[in-house]
Length: 253
Ligand SMILES: Nc1ncnc2c1ncn2[C@@H]1O[C@H](COP(=O)(O)OP(=O)(O)O)[C@@H](O)[C@H]1O
Ligand SMILES: Nc1ccn([C@@H]2O[C@H](COP(=O)(O)O)[C@@H](O)[C@H]2O)c(=O)n1
Image 1 (cartoon, rainbow, N blue to C red):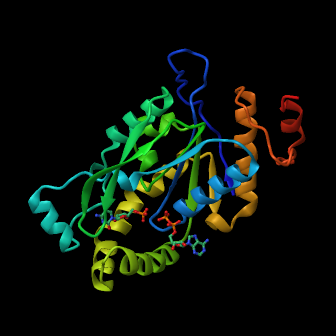
Image 2 (image 1 turned 45 degrees about the horizontal axis):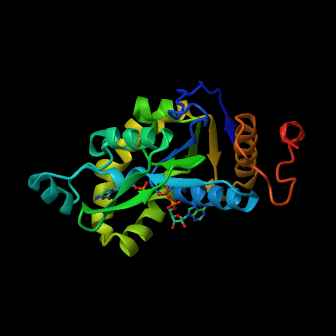
């Protein structure tokens, strides 16, 4: 794990001024690096520790709808879904602002088999912690700056491609030929151009993803500590979830 310096994020208060904004954790890494798995693990750990509301949002829900010509290209694996323009970053930012200001939001449901949004939405309620994951989130300045903690999941390209072949054949209706064509034409070059360079914005670089228990425990302790400092209620069920003595001293009695 590499820990780098962090810039303070934008401070947004709810209208009544009493509640601090949710703690937003951005989780970035290449395709199949383990972003979703790390988010699931963080949610499980936070839920185990006590009463804390956590929501998870994926950049994948915000692919833009394509014009017919581009849709045709997508079905031939000739469309670049790994370019920043393919994502509706403004919609992600607006959703974050709504949640920060205490308003519920809705997340579009995307279909990777048809390359289209289904037109359906999943509701999302304001929460104390927001996990936001996706390959290009730190590329977008406003999204990057609203994140309180930025994680980059580091995973070598061979492992990511092997996982992608398995996932996209099993879950996204793709053939091996189409996966390799898309990967070599767009996924890999775009990772090098738009995702890998944003590693420099990360506060924590996590190798081995979800297997990295030390990194995940440190991240959990940090979240716990920050929420206590900001006056949020965080009562652990076991009373000693974080081994950081300083954090224990700050816990309200
Ligand atoms: N550390 C790991 N070891 C083995 N398999 C993993 C590991 N992390 C993730 N996976 C598997 O790889 C696939 C992609 O993981 P996922 O977390 O969905 O990646 P991402 O969200 O970055 O695309 C999933 O099938 C997941 O179970
Ligand atoms: N219609 C689409 C939209 C996106 N992709 C690919 O998804 C990848 C990002 O998702 P991860 O869960 O792997 O981070 C990205 O690399 C796009 O190429 C797609 O194949 N089809």
